[in-house]
Amino acid sequence: MYFVSVTRLRVRSIRFLPAFLLANGGIVRYIKTVNGFAGGMELLDKNLTFWTATVWHSEADMKAFRSGEPHKKAMRNLPHWCDEAAYAHWQQQENTPPDWDIVHEMLLAEGRLSKVKYPSIQQGVMAYPPPKWRKTQRILASKALA
Image (tube, rainbow, N blue to C red; front, side, top):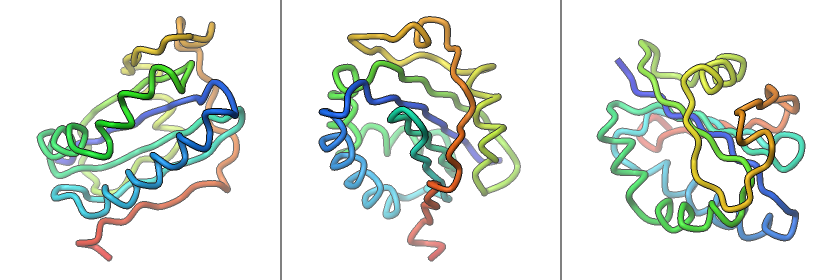
């Protein structure tokens, strides 16, 4: 079994976008080198919304990544940068990321909210629309698989 972690983050203003993208770039470079990372994908959607789906060999592997830099540093800024933030975790047989429709479905069914300082109305009720701009998808391959 593989452990899946998905996130949906909406940057609350374009003025936070450069810092968010810089942090994201560091995280993407880092994640590819982390033990236990099986693969993933990310998507830039409408309204400065970012989706991620990552697959791990274990929950412990994902937690080690989440607690390490540069991810930990970016998470400290998330409450200020974002007005919507949610995540979900589950286990699956496949070592490949789930389709975006499944990511959306599981986020609504099993998701949890991350704290943000300036929550949108949608954040309070987790009424997130499904991803629309799928052509912006980027595959994240583990260096071990590359």
